[in-house]
Image (cartoon, rainbow, N blue to C red; front, side):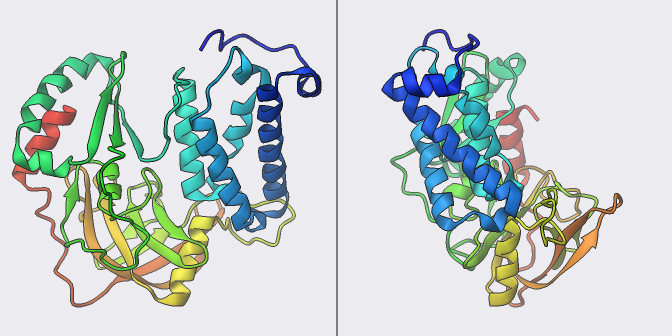
Length: 345
């Protein structure tokens, strides 16, 4: 795509009046996003309807496959509008994560049409690219690594950055299921996208996967809120999605779609899968990667305040009896060795 970096001096309304069909369509999409963002910012996340979320998700998919012409991206400033959707406090984890993935692709100068679903970027640097390549070749030869990375394609960019993508032909398991969903306590993966493939967690990056109307299917403890999260193994105090309270709204604490799904789980008493990431500062965390530690029930929730006096929702989850104990031996020595050879960590 040519000339993607030039600045525009055209009025947007002039562009809509005098521009090409594609430019007019992009302006309509931009205004549609801005209108919904203004509505949510004024009235709170609950003002965004299910129809709005479906529309915005469909629009992100359309933009991910869009064939750009000339300088249309900069002229229409559609990227600025999509940046509004990256606010999880207004649009929820799933939609905001998809927006961030698409924005990262554009920020890296990649405007090639392609899916944004099922992407997970690992922060390999160009300095370690050669070592990672040679390590990959060795580890991919092991049966254990081939199994855990099945259905995952690895694409290496010119700068040495690796992108992990689900093979579109691979029959991945749906994560929109309550309960264990066929998983065994101790199941381990090197990357979150592998857990997504196996139906453990339905988000590539988000910590909560669920639906406002039915509840949370799964959560990942990843250390994002170390100040307020508490992990006692069988009992967890888990922080809902944080954010700013909408001015002049009746909200007492930020109430995102992800947080509302956990509140729904408290009401329905349905089991929630719990995964722990090595990034969380907990004695129960795996040494590397991400691990499934069983099903829990949301027993209670309260509105607490952090050290700055900002309110947030805190959920108490209790591990359901009758399961195998948390398997802290996973990943085992072989899995840790494979992980180190692949990542250089």
